[in-house]
Image (cartoon, rainbow, N blue to C red):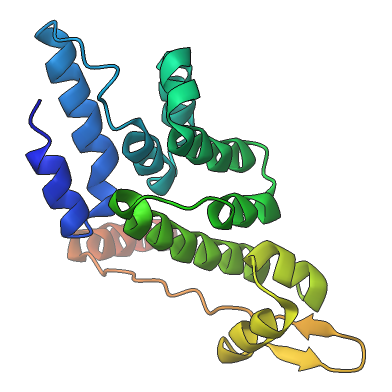
Length: 197
């Protein structure tokens, strides 16, 4: 099997392409009738789907993995543990699962990039869902110590009340990139003219 394209994507940190590359390679190898199950990079494949926020595909991939591979490759199980916590929306456990395994050199960059992306996603979720939140809860969502979480949210413009240990969320300004299409403006003008007459 030629994993050159996959290795190149990992080396160039094109992590958003990993799942598609693995899916394509798996279909190609399966169509050729080659036995690939024992040497397939399942951990990379699972993490690729997790990175792409495609938990359904990760679940189906997990179900297709033989029990011998699951028993013989602890990194595959560790990757799926992250997927399980994402599926259950157990946000704090996702961070624990990431930190709780000694990842191989091959996937360490992918996992680190996912962890950073996931922290940013959780921050956006907190920003949109809360006006105030306790420092303890924010730290849990962000997967950080309370001190690191306080520093992180302060850098994002939030306020911290040291006595109550509560955070005041600074709402992110939604940037709307509206393009003025001349044909839409023309139709709107014609519609207004019809209403006036």
